[in-house]
Image 1 (cartoon, helix red, strand yellow):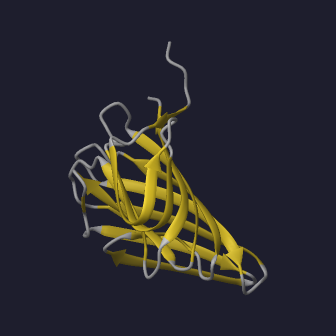
Image 2 (spheres, rainbow, N blue to C red):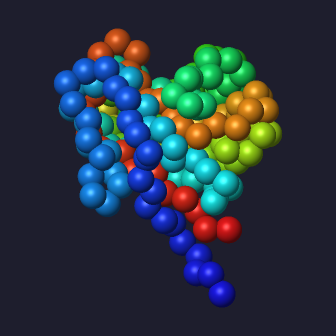
Image 3 (cartoon, rainbow, N blue to C red):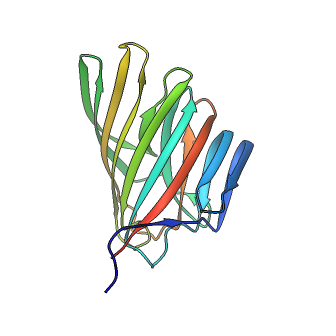
Length: 179
């Protein structure tokens, strides 16, 4: 009988623009002053669903696109989000070329858990992510809760993560969810 749980995966390769990025011995990826960073070969037929955990510092919004052989898919994303910032709560739905993970609005730290459902399967991919970062307006925490779909029915083996107008530093780990 197989055990339930999350299995830390090692990318087959990484690509980035910026200062540095390395795959550690356990499979997580550390990066410094990069945007984008692409993790290749993390989605396979071994798992249907995945969890990505990211911690980053920087000063701009962080987004992702699914990739196939290192090439990002820039169409077909629909995002529904909820953001709580101090006493203000915002929500919206949008069709986009990528999915927003969280915003690091000043030089500060943010964290994210992103669940991906079926990215390697030749079907639409659904995602759910929750992120938090320091709220410089509050002060306190800023929360992002996002659900998204990617309507393109292709198989994707990787993910590209990027900031809109800056670079970021931090660590990413991708886990496969046992079937």
